[in-house]
Amino acid sequence: MSRHRAPRLRRRSLTSLLAVSGGALLAMGCGSARPAPTSAEIPRDPLAVLDPGEWNARSAEELRALSVQGAADELNTWADLGAEESFLDPARDTLTGFVKTAYLSPEELSGLDHEAAHDRVSNVAPEFWQEGLRTAWDGGDRAFYAAALAPPFRAVGRPALAADWYRTEQEDKPALALGTTIAWTVIDTTTRAVGQFAYRLGIVAEIDEDGGAAAAAIRLSLHGMDGCGIAEHEGRLVPTLADEEAHRSVQEATWDEVLSSPRIPLEHLLDEDSSLFAGDDTTYLPCE
Image 1: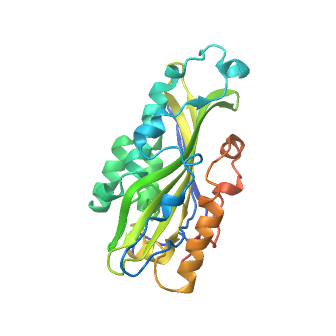
Image 2: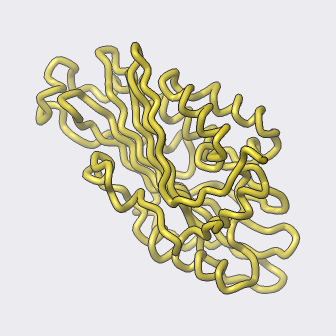
């Protein structure tokens, strides 16, 4: 029996509790992408029409450079930590490094085998995610933590990110939250079909006295994908770009339900039951 199975549930979660460094909750969901207008000869980039006022980053460096929202003097748990944004540099560097490798480097990850891809992501993951990441990889949920495309698909250009950093608090502890939708244009190099896929990503990290992440929870949903295709390719991504109604419907729903409203408000990051991270069968084709 293969250890890699299709993500049947649109929302998955597992918890890894580490006695010293804290806990990590890894929750996964589902996904979609919408069809782009193309001619038979010249594929067009569907992300070119995105509003730059909503999509405020195109790289890990631009993500890291975004300002942190939320005033420290309005949060009781931040009273002894100060209001300087630079205080959060260690935590922001850690989270940005993980996002860059896991979701912003599909060409690099696509060239690695199953274990090599795990090692690449694991090398930039904080210690408190290591055990949960290994379990997710072995359990068939690699797609949620490594944006690696199956052949004959290729990512085109740069990703588009709609992102917000928030200074906040949770369970009477200071916290840093990151909410971002990450979209990629993708092409089937055989048929020249073009579309997009997206991740919704939410991270809430407990902040220690040195500005680092002491523990963090991460939730994700994946959009614009074929669940059976992912299972057949051991967790590599298979976008819904086939010329059939089910694939076209997933692409259209991804655009309408995810890419048209990409920002993730703080209240949804703090709500463990937020509908933004609950999967559905409209933006992700499940494998029954």
